[in-house]
Length: 252
View 1 (cartoon, one colour):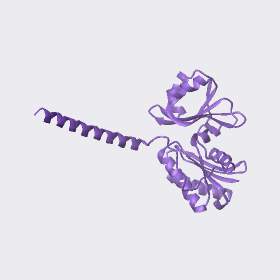
View 2: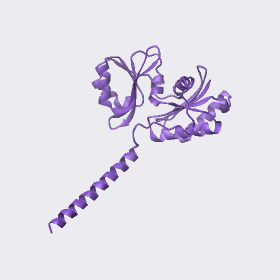
View 3: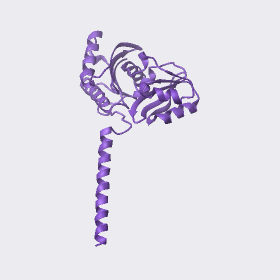
View 4: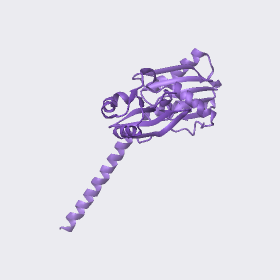
């Protein structure tokens, strides 16, 4: 089984080729470059280095969200374009599931957090017993609420993800159960984990066509929220003017 993995849900851009339990190649960049500049060249470079034909892959595993709206759209467009061109199925891998999969076999609770701003995080809770288990499905929530939930579960926690440096002080101040911060080589999203977990889903028949694939944003983008706020304000101004006009007419 040969899987191409694509990860672009955050600042990290990553691509990997997985085959029968081995990561043949992985190319990861965590720097301020747009994914539209990096993903396809990274994939092309990997293919050249390992000397394979992309037509020989069985499926394309893509990090399906949540995360950066722009990043997810670029990753989705890249995966869909390749899926259509190669006539290959896509595997939708939830971003936080794949991030937690970095710590395969770790004891205790695994809690990836992605900064969603305004004290909000994208998060999920996972553990490994005999197999990978989702304790809480990925969701958007307040960081304080997450810490309270983890404290209430009473187990050791490992945090990872780009939200850790943002909320590290809050974690240190409010966590009452033992916790650790994942080390650098496993604390960010990786296409190798997307591909490896994608291989599990592929074996279970969890695939979709390129046309069916849609990212999971979990919440509306900042621009969409701002537009909705402007529309609400506009409606409120119209109602105020109408009520004010009616009041003046009644008193004339």
